[in-house]
Image: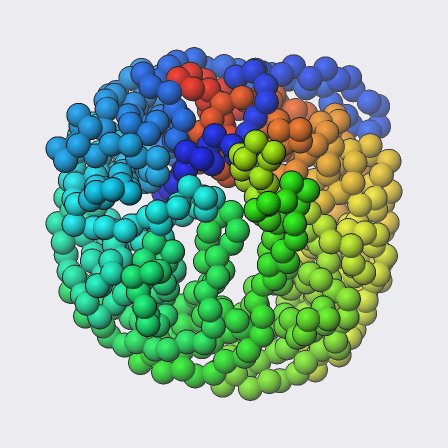
Length: 600
């Protein structure tokens, strides 16, 4: 999978992912074995090498997919690339590399190819007074592949106030399957070759930016959904959102269809709140409910109208432009061969319920009991003849804070909403309640389903197992005695379930709930990652950014990295990037970069 990162200099200067410690500081966390509890002494990561970019990496500081990949560091005006051994491959100023003197590029877009040893660096020189410039560089050589001044208004003029996206620029979508860029303009759409900038096709019939696409290799066709982007908003008066199928070779429209709803974007990531699936001979659009189309003709087959996700806005303490919104509150549709199950947000009074619809006709087969007072219902599973519904659980919060000095801080984290949590099992035949458990405090973890017979789930202090068929509780473990804080997630790990908590992990046997281990106290854990079989925890409290590596078999802390740098991947927090195989961590600070081995 290609790693794609976009960064705003504003985000990198004042990001909520900012770190607050020494660069590349490998922390040796002392701890002793605790008999019976399994708390382990921590180890250290091994520093492979330390090196320097020729420039300060203040906009992008990212690596490719593996340990021998290239490492890219950029500022507004220049870039340098190191190889897997920390040796410089190339470096240069954008104005000297590009033939159209593209410069001052605070918005940049990197696309890794060829196992991280090459790819594209897309530069956007958005000029308030003058003609915008773009250029694409070869990351392997630093040479300019192509440039253009034909594509204007690719960025909103106030893009520095919009936050950042971990995907493409609104008006530029990289199509990996075609190795090409779709570029949206005021008067149409262009598909250009990524390596040369050669225009494959141009059409005046497709306008707006591509929110989502799905590529059909066999027919060489693209199903895409277009919307009015911020950059072109004022230029696209009368624009209507489009759902289309396009011939990828010439841009001819196979069919287009109208759809209902308004596409909104998340507060910080600026991602469109939408999803698109192609399953069999149908296209499913998830926007203000679900809308279903025939893949071959574009004919709308059926739809169900409801609100997909909630952006619960509130002011944060600083006020004056500060905002906070909540997402990931409703489960995605659950598809089976003959039906689709929808978690419906019915009214503004937080009433929710589940509907089962026939996959072919959309006919309502049944509706469950109405569940009042439930802000979030983020997970739904089918297990045998039961539909399991998680009522409550973590939601994603995106926040922009404006400080007293006028600076902005961007944050993305998980949190809990105070509501009545429960685990509900419905009979698949008619939607009636089979059983329900409400033994949860102010939070509830996600579910782990084992062999369609058992479900494991927890709250902050307890960890439970239930027989799915009967609802019988099989065990109840006092998770609080593990001394790793309140639980917020669970992970399926073979014969065990690992409970991720605010101060570390605890592992329990699926068979009887017996604890295998509890980690040393780590404090402030707000996120976890499973990358190539390597497991990491993150701590961003008090503006820190610490990444811990955990041995999931033993609970030992392999090591930790506390970073103070800028750049890195927004996914992991400022100053840090991790290779796609999870074997190496990279810590950045200005010109410096340290490569750290995860497994000694």
